Structure formats: structure tokens, C-alpha cells
Length: 156
Ligand code: HEM
Image (cartoon, rainbow, N blue to C red; front, side):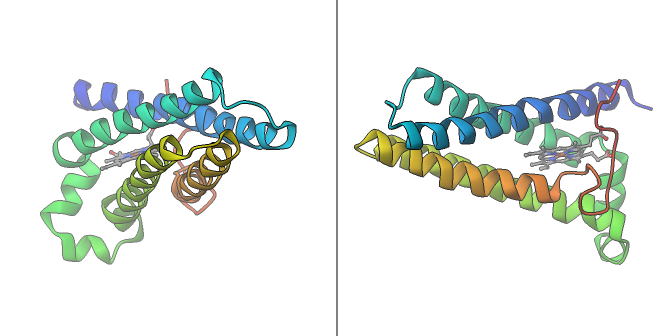
């Protein structure tokens, strides 16, 4: 196996945990901020920023895998029609990448919307809605067995 492929897959696999932890934390903090009527503070900003940046990084290495390194997607790209009839190839060539790109766009838009909100309560609400929708999409489509496709949760 190509060693750059192995390394990139390893990065993509571990970065998933940064995404999941930051995403979940940003939502928990938004809910607790709404309940306790806290100020929208540096921790709120930082967790959302880590969620967004780790997603940008995931997109970058995902595209590298998709178009350059992954034997799975390269096989799918070589005969897209046939790949659509194979549920595993279709998952990697279409579902995984497409749904995650949508999720990343939702987080990016949500980040701008949150910034534009004038009160702290509205910022918490925007964070909860947009990061929540994106995290839901990510968890539905992530290859951790919830929707059928499973890869190692921790790759070494
Ligand atoms: C929220 C964003 C994403 C998450 C959480 C995520 C998560 C994962 C996970 C856990 C794997 C399995 C890695 C392994 O086998 O150890 C994987 C593989 C992969 N992902 Fe993503 N991914 C995301 C976004 C993307 C995007 C946007 C693309 C493409 C544009 C992409 C392309 C791929 C490819 C090509 C593979 C490898 C298929 C293979 O060679 O076996 N991913 N991803």
C-alpha cells in the first residue's frame, strides 16, 4: 500500500475525533449557555472555531484521498456507472463525500450567521441549530457502523 495513502488515511481517521469532540462540546456549551443565560465567551468561540477548522482540514485531506490516493474512489472514478451499482463503492464515491461537504457548508454558513447575531442568546441559538444540523449529518454518514459501513474507530 502507498505509504502517503496510509498516512493520509490515518490523519483523516484521527481528525474525525477532533471534529466530533469539538462539535459535541460546542453544542453542549451552547445549550448550557442558553439555560444559564451566560455570556457567549471565548470558550464558545474557540470550540466552534476548532469544529470549523478541523472540518476544513478534513475536506482538504478528503479531497486528496478522493482524487489522488484512495484506491477505492479511484476505482469508482474509473467506471462511475458500475460503481453506482455497488453499495460500498457508491458510499465512498458519493454518499460519504457529498453529505460531509454539505455538513461543512452548513458549519461555515452557521459560523457567519452566529457572528452576525447581536445578542449572546441569539449566538447560542444559532450555534445550536447550525452546528447541530451539521453534526447530525456527519454522525449519520460517518463510517462507524451506524448506517452499515464501518471502518476502524481508532486506526493505528
Ligand atoms: C465531517 C467530515 C468527514 C469525516 C468525519 C470523515 C470521516 C472518515 C472516516 C472515519 C474514514 C475512514 C478512515 C479509515 O478507514 O480509517 C473516511 C475515509 C474517507 N473519506 Fe472521509 N470524512 C469526512 C469528510 C470527507 C470528505 C469531504 C471527503 C471527500 C471530498 C472524504 C473522503 C474520504 C475518502 C476518499 C476516504 C477513504 C476511502 C478509502 O480509501 O478507504 N471524507 N472518512
